[in-house]
Length: 188
Image (cartoon, rainbow, N blue to C red; front, side, top):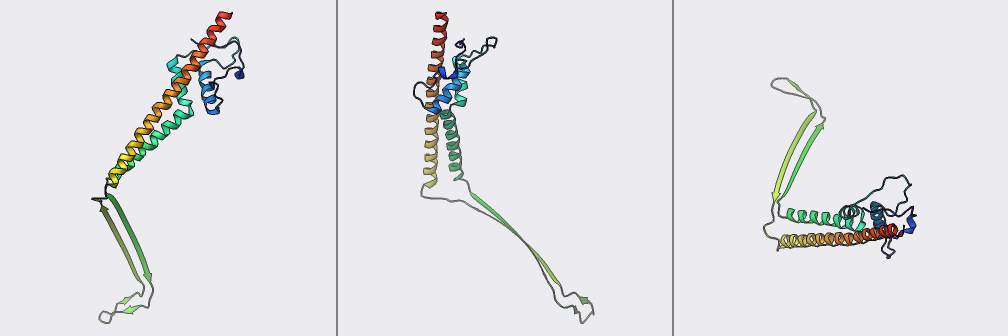
């Protein structure tokens, strides 16, 4: 259980690890807040405690580098699906409809004597569909699929790396908070 320091101001706790990098400071501050070390609480407020595993899980959701690595992994996964789509046939369809009206003089049928209107109307409808499949493309599809899979493996390794770095930063912050709480308890 992590006990907060008695009434600290937020600027008294440096959770950036001394690097002074704003993105890391924000992630560390959020992790510190989750740990309950950088927030001043009134005397009667309920104390929050988290385990190290919970702190790591909470900080992974807000660490910009982990979130970016997750986004990159999603993007490369879409690239693999697009490369697999290169093996599918191409389908296309078309539809056309036309309607025309032309005016002209009336005419009479000489045999029956029936009168025909001079207006001529015509409608037309045409539908079409085609499919094509490339049999050989000089191994382009295979190369694109291999490249997409390699990028996906690289993004997966990048996510593992960022998660490990985040776990290291959070563990350091967590242990520092435990140490500060213990030193405060011993000093009192």
